[in-house]
Image (cartoon, helix red, strand yellow):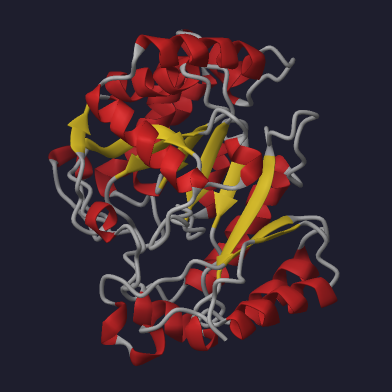
Length: 356
């Protein structure tokens, strides 16, 4: 998730915090009425989400059952723990068997601008994580599993509520280990009128076999490409040595499925691939190499968000090389490299507040 509000307060962060508060106490009727008016604008543009056709043919339900069966000896993520989640066992991600844990559901105003628009990105923060990075900004949710246990029907209702209040998409954050639950919930929600695009907001570390089951269901892929060096991905992400190679292959598959992300006339993204790369101190992620890979393997107008907000949290202080914010020079070196490589669709964030 794009945690750009960390350590600062601006209009976008204020709006997001206010909406979270409203959700915690129950949204006022006035806001709900406004949202419904906004939702009609969002969904009357002629857009049809990818999953609708598969829902109508019954294939969406069939794919959900295939993913559910994989949890018998779980191989939903590249760790392939093989634990029987159907019997309540937990693997490295620590997701509690077949139970679904959700940390939050709210319009997010801190995501990429083409996802946010005026109504916000309809974000569902899913608890637990397959990657378990030492510097995780959301470690309470991702590592400790903070959140509330919900039924799949509850999950579907949350999606519909986000649509009702005017969000532009359903943004599923950290979805990999809950992919079976997601497909079941989308199938239920589609039957009840869900028509928003699905955003698969992932670490990027995905199995091709699982992504193939998501084809025609996910509208927008939003993967990270965190590291170039496998030794560093293993060091900082709980032994995930395969991260660089598997993420590269996963991103190519995502692009094959949804293509280049291009916003609609109203500026809102409805489909396509949007890549994130978080610039880390001391070139820990191999940022320039990541930009070279993108430029060499994808169209030059691929959407790339070069993220500026790295903050040392959680276990980052255990590693001296990760224990500070990035500098302005470090960030601009990556931006300039991307431009020199001919990448034309860059999301360059505010960096003037960074120290030299």
